[in-house]
Image (cartoon, rainbow, N blue to C red; front, top):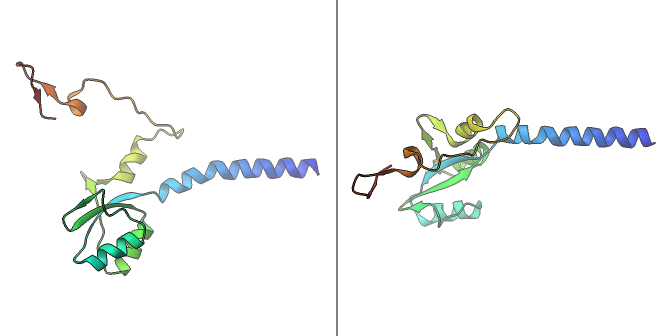
Length: 127
């Protein structure tokens, strides 16, 4: 009986370790959704998307899975995956993650890529 309990516990632990790897393949991506009327905006809200934080005019940015984006398409909406240089947010995150699952989060304190520049007169320059 003890052997079965240990084997079941080991199997559960191994299964739990495999889940994060599977979840990352089906993770969230950023999408822009343009709506034409209040009914479409209401549909987005009813599906649980935030309609206040990332709304710009008649476009809202949402975080959704591919499956959720397909569901929105079936409702007549047209979510467009956002990319930077042809790379989606999920793809970029996958590139930044180390093979052991950890992340390199160090950013130099003063690097023009992150904080901009200082002009000779002491004023800040653009990033």
